[in-house]
Length: 255
Image (cartoon, rainbow, N blue to C red):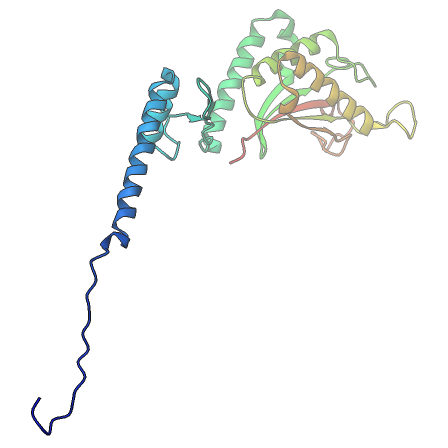
């Protein structure tokens, strides 16, 4: 250096060799490798399963949400087994159900018309669409047509009739309500422990038992109601026989 110039220190940096292998590129490559191996193992596992499992896997990848009508199984992981997938029940309108009720009504009437034993009581069976669904009502119009006076025991014709109605209701998923009604005459025993409430409930239960014998499941029975004379059919004539009846209500499906 020339005289008069300051001695400026010189710092020499030594560049070491490249250590690029400490970066993250190798992790991506390793992850790809592991993913490929996992896919290979899945393919090999599927190839070793039966046709049902293969079909279920195929349908899953076509529709992972599981709502396709072609893919109703979910794989459990055990060879040769699958759990059935229960699809949500489609919404049914009241109009659709009323149409089905009308068809069922015709089936019941057709079946009853073929039995001569029911000819005399055909006019005592009435059908009506109400807020809850379809009501089938067995109405008394003369003594002992369905029940003995003051009794909850069904006669033979009524027993067979309700059995036949039950065989039709068993074809449906709808819940069923059974109601018992009396006229305004007080129960003849005069006991406070057994009144028209008990009698109407017992008659409803008698009908329930015969519906079950006809094929209706116990789970299908939703309610048993004993109204006594609080739901008179003919309010102007509270003692009329038409107020003595059993109602079978096929409820609308919910949703």
